[in-house]
Length: 423
Image 1 (cartoon, helix red, strand yellow):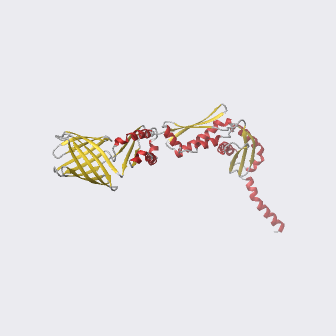
Image 2 (cartoon, helix red, strand yellow):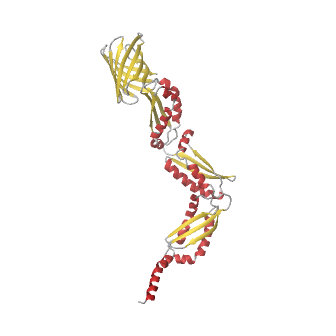
Image 3 (cartoon, helix red, strand yellow):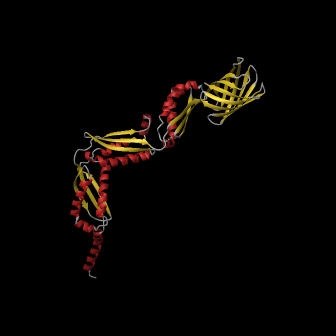
């Protein structure tokens, strides 16, 4: 083979890939929309581009790129007409088409009238308390700014189709941060002003009622009445929330409520620690227990029904914790039938749900031994032995609320019902 033939063959081989690439079918179409004024957000431009993407794919995919190049001017004219109908609110200025296996389509547009300068964003929560709405809004702190940034600079006449973009943005954000809620979005044009109205509302099973309790076993509950009423209103704010939301954020809600309680001066004065427990449901349970590691003080009055004697009495208990589980205390008891006073000093030890107590009573000079076990926050078992009378008592106690309890007692040779008033 001669040298000139070899060179010609090598040149043809090197040009073959270029020829194949030029005549290859269109495998991909890239569409880009450009706002020549630069005001329309990228999110809206992408929406405009996606509308034209469907058209471009139908026109060009799998078409011969060489034939496409030959008819390029006709396709540009066709795309110009389609774009003017698709881009509501925008004027299509120019179309650039670059045929090839990867065909590029660039459309240059601008708003045909005024643009949205400063849209008003109206974000509302429906069906929940105002204070709760503020807490929910903190979970989507960037949403208002995202909405404003998305629609600002767009054509005033593009509100209808821009609303679809905003709805998708809002619903994706709500689904991510507040999946127990849905959102309705409207774009409203009034007197050359654009407003985006977003209403977020709960779905699914909702909290209808709140069973609330705030109490302490370490100080008289009558001292907590003002605090009790205050946090009743605080807990009522949870009404209207989806049960699923309360369940998912239970620990966080408990911590928020406990943090507010910790800031109360009353808890600081009495050195109390709050413990908050939520029980999610349509009937939401909120149990707040205030405990002290320093003191234990309570006053109780007893009325016994079915007892032959000593059926009206009262007791005061003043205790000081010497360790997290151990307490020393003094008690004063009065029996109203004969106006007899009994005084005692003792100690108790707690382990788990159980407690054991020893009391030396005066002036009788006898001993009392008490064992108690808490079955639940409302039910308690008691066994007590009085050495001076050589008598045993067994009781099952039920707490109706923080100021009233009942106890069914077996007192050696008789059964009776005890009504207990707690201060």
